[in-house]
Image (tube, rainbow, N blue to C red):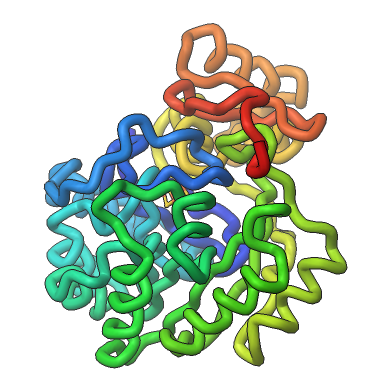
Length: 331
Ligand code: SF4
């Protein structure tokens, strides 16, 4: 069973993305209020080989061999935490590029790019997708809740330095949270930071998966449109994903579902058709009721559970720690 490679999963930014997760859940130096994986407990900022790099590479080879033509658009390093915390990331990117011609992306929060070795490691990727959700230290602390050693100045300086030496595509993501970073002053400050960085694109996003904190809300559609206009010519709203989840790869169906929801919490309405499709492809068809039982078994064995957000139910891995109620940004 693959533990560190999952998908391909539909990505709003990268199409069909084969995911490579180089850390254990949830290993992150940020603790974003909107994080779909729940809270980071504890928040860690040490770089080390959280997962053996050779083990990851072996799984990548198997997944690429098993994939049919056109099944994968991007090979994406995307952690259940922060990707660059794995100290062997540079080695992994080099090796993956040796075994496939598919483009390689790195999704990162960008906080460690002030370190020259991290910039050098990820510069071999074809696209790097960092986060800039704030334009000042206070908003950075409010929305990303970083490790005390991470500063807003390091984030912007690191991304600016990376941009100067990086030949690939730099696509910044800005996640908007109502009442936290969607005011005009907050957006002007983000725009100033983006002007210093100079990304190829700014992809404006809103939380669509269960946020760590129950009070998190997406801004209204008209406010998102205003934000896109304020963030400059490179800014665009990320469209909703239309592609359906396919449960690809080897392993039993419960493991495949768990591999996906450990990194991408999903609604039953997304998972059930994928389970039905996988069973049909494997020659042992099941109906929707039987597919629901797969989810219930994951819950009964303590490997997954559900989280309620805004009247919707999401399936998440058991490790996820989600706040219930709690403080709003103004309390
Ligand atoms: S959204 Fe990304 S950077 Fe933020 S806490 Fe979650 S994993 Fe870490």
